[in-house]
Amino acid sequence: MSKTILMITGDAGEALEIFYPKHRLEEEGWRVDVAALEKGAIQTVIHDFEPGFATYTEKLGYRVAADLTVDEVRPESYDALILPGGRAPEYLRNRLRVVAITRHFLDAGKPIAATCHAPLILAAAGSLRGRTLTCYPELEPDVRVAGGLFVNREVVIDGNLVTARAWPDNGPWMREFVRLLKSPAKAT
Image (cartoon, rainbow, N blue to C red; front, side, top):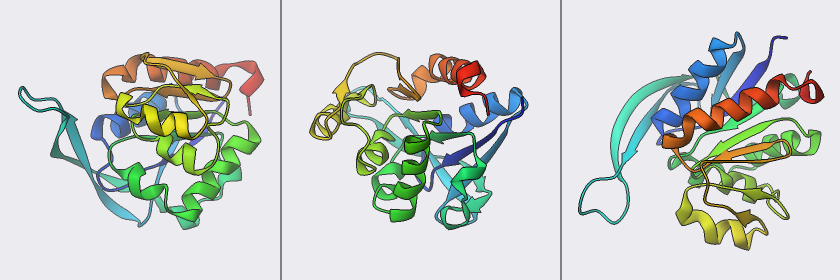
């Protein structure tokens, strides 16, 4: 069955967490619409670890086209939601429309894939209380304050929510998300 999937990201979204799920889900024959604050090209970034640095470094990545703005999104038209990480979630979580869209998917029980810093958006939507998830490990305090349980594993599935730590976990993350999307209980 054909699926239509929404991805919300923006400038400084992690390149590998945008392009890998987009192409992997398109490989299944599903449509992935990218929404951002503005239509047009957004600048992704590449986060990596370098010897001698206490945290990741950031380099410019590829540009990706935003198909529509978050204001144009009609969440009821989508079967699932992808929230990539990078730095984009730091400012997207402050946009009421992004939070409202995310709440729609949570309230409807539709599948959500979130990785890296994306749980910041889930926390802003008030959805982490009682949930078990993973994310970039430095966000563990944010998860705890929001009432969630952080587990440091490559992928965690909690009902309709599939989370991963970061781009090195893309394979297991998308494997489990595709499995969830194909499960009869989540057929749309």
